Length: 214
Image 1 (cartoon, rainbow, N blue to C red):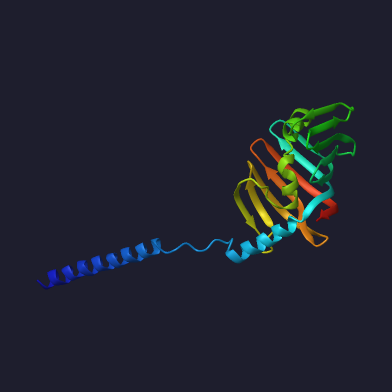
Image 2 (tube, rainbow, N blue to C red):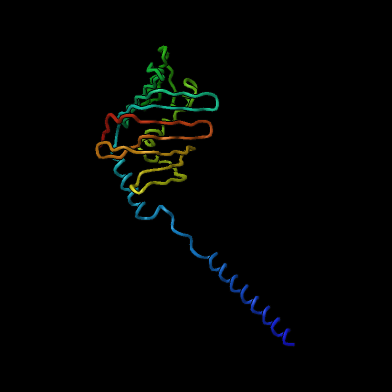
């Protein structure tokens, strides 16, 4: 009889112990998630950085461009002048010879090849694909090069403690920023990697020749 009493007490205590464990696990399950790293103060710093970038209305830079597609690769130099009205880009081979000149304005895009042949289209993406073998995303590249999103929908973004973009997912591109450089009081990207399904593009900016602000 005494053994039965202790045995019964044992099972009661065991059930009570399991019940406590169940309550503890349930409480853990409904605990609120920790706050995201992109906290409100950091978001405010990011918005301040973007507001400062919005004062830039044009730039001139020199750099290196690396492109890898499913069929081929390209590596060479880049000389780019951009303002609100137009873009003028010279693309060079690895040894310095001019491969193409791309000029974009409100009426369309013109590409002049090394042999002097001129080809015109409505957008740079289709034009560069048919002539150079890769789609240069010129519509968004001027904003991304400055380290800011375009006006279209942002799928995801992260930034550092100074409000500068570290990663951006937008318009079918995964964009990462590896370092920044100070230019006339502005922190601008030094190295940018853009990835899409058919294309990887790397832009290394060797010199920001000028930055035009309002």
